[in-house]
Amino acid sequence: MNNLTAISFAETDLDAIAAHEGRVAVFVDAEGKMDLAARRVNRLTKGAVARLVESARWEKMKDGEAGSIGFPAGMKADAVDVVRLARNAKGKVARKAGAMLAKTRGGKADTLMLCASLRRAEEVIFGFAMRDYVFTDHKTADDKRSGGLKVMHGKPDELEAAAAPLMAVAQGAHLTRDLTNEPANVLTTTNYAERLKEMESLGLKVEVLDEKALAKLGMRTLLSVGQGSDSPSYVVAMHWDGGKKGDAPLALVGKGVVFDTGGISLKPSAGMEEMTMDMGGSAVVAGVMRTLALRGAKANVVGIIGIVENMPSGKATRPGDVIKTMKGDTVENINTDAEGRLVLCDVMWYAQEKYKPAAMIDLATLTGAIIVGLGHENAGVFSNNTSFCNDFLKAAEAEGEGAWRMPLGQAYDDLLKSRIADMKNVGGRPAGSITAAQFLQRFVKEDCPWIHLDIAGVASVKSETALAPVGATGWGVASLNRLIADNYEAE
Image 1 (cartoon, rainbow, N blue to C red):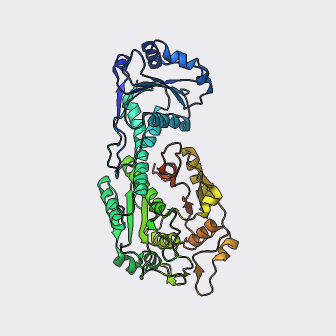
Image 2: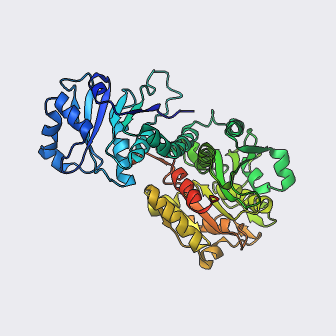
Image 3: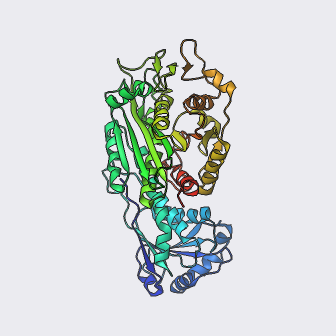
């Protein structure tokens, strides 16, 4: 696993600035007002900071952006990054500034951050930690990250304490990215289950159900997806019991298809290599559970994921097969490439039957249709409970993670009618992401508040985002953590 950038906190020492090797970051507000640290750097560089602040370049910069002074005279630093940021900048802007500093350093040089004047310095540090990520586990060249972040502040202990829960979120997001970026020949179904089991070291209770146990439970649709693969299928349940004893947990359910060929309904070869990310929903669940454990959340949460591989073989499920779900309903499998919902429906039913959750959220890279509708800016949000849905949307907005509510309705549900079974697993080309959600809603009990998050467009992207490089984003870890902190933590 990629560990977070090493971060150390120390009391501001103006005399030590000149000797720092690497990069030095100072913060100046839009009007050009410098704090003590910025003034010291300005004096050391013989007025270079002031010249930058007075330039036309500075006028064009937005809050959270920076101008760099390379090899500054009077200092040992490789560069000085002068960040334009108001002292009371809000969280998203502060995070943007931190991310920019991480991107600028390129994962190599030590960065000394002088942030005594900032009211939300922990948000800058969080942005830095989130963006300072690379996935180089399978590169032979020595291009891994080196160096770290040194933070000087007037009250370093208080700042470190304020940053700690945010670092737990960053660690969870990095785990999600690692899992989603991992190739399928490494992250096999068995390897995935083993990695999740290792999180017991954090205080989670982790239960791994093998195929024999799943068959006994009646998870026939989940098993049907994996039966064409030589790799066994699993369900893994991760428990965090930090809330009041006896309180019903929040259930997080994730689709964990480690590779999706489409099965007998084989996908086109172009782009199929990207289907290593088809377990992205489960990776978010794993990341959230890691975050909750690391920060000692006072909440009861269970994260349950179905781990399968969808492959074509003589044992694979065929289009036209009829399978009985754990619930007891039958499904006509029209398209074996619509497999994620078959995994989720059994796991969702199991979650409700066993844990009687206060509410349930499922996450999946479920449909290409959601990308057509929302692009890579927003996840699709479907829900049977407006209050619950609004709580999540509020959390996502606060964390800057795009999410957009989509409709549900009987007309969409009617598209799933089958001539020979209780339902089909697809409803045709129109409204593909909605009919997928309608399929899942059939496995939600009436008294259970539920959200379905279709994250196909946001789990892994081909251009960098505000806090992530190209590839897996870790989308959802921060939003779900905030939802839990704001609504499910014990007093």
